Amino acid sequence: MNRLAIVGWMAGLLVAVWAGLAETAPPVNSVRDFMRKKLVHSQKVLEGVTTDDLEMVAKHSQELSLLSQAATWQVLQTPEYLQHSTEFRRAADSLTEAARKRNADGVALAFVDVTMKCVTCHKYVRGVRTAAK
Ligand code: HEC
Image 1 (cartoon, rainbow, N blue to C red):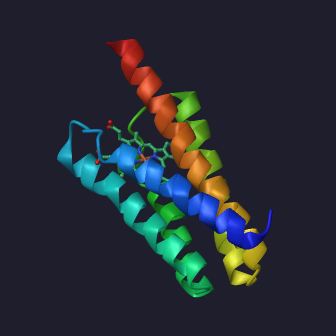
Image 2: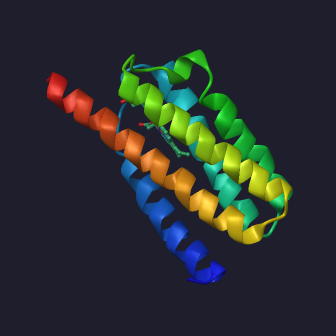
């Protein structure tokens, strides 16, 4: 797959993810506001990827990584949630590194990876919530 195809595919995936997210309603507003920052930063990352502004990519992927270390991020206290968080952080850090090295292909792939991690963790969280009902 060439880079343009990856970016196109990824943009489509993100739009789908964002549309899905708009429909979920978390209980606590502060958590919700915090979680929404991920959306803002990932939109900025996509903007950076598509305009070849790798400094913008690095800045916002680093923000994503930092968010994942905040106390508000720790919504669930399970080993699986911790694992998802660690993998997300690792993916965001790879993205930052690829952007700093100006490795455009690496950036495109790492961004797909980060986005998949958003989806995977949300799926996990939804599964836990459903099971608890
Ligand atoms: C390690 C787990 C995890 C990862 C990774 C993750 N999230 Fe979340 N996200 C959550 C949890 C937990 C919530 C809160 C859900 C709830 O309380 O119902 C949430 C909520 C959200 C919300 C709020 C939805 C609303 O109704 O306002 C958005 C937006 C969001 N995440 C975007 C993202 C994006 C974009 C990414 C990837 C860049 C991402 N998340 C990665 C766990 C994660």
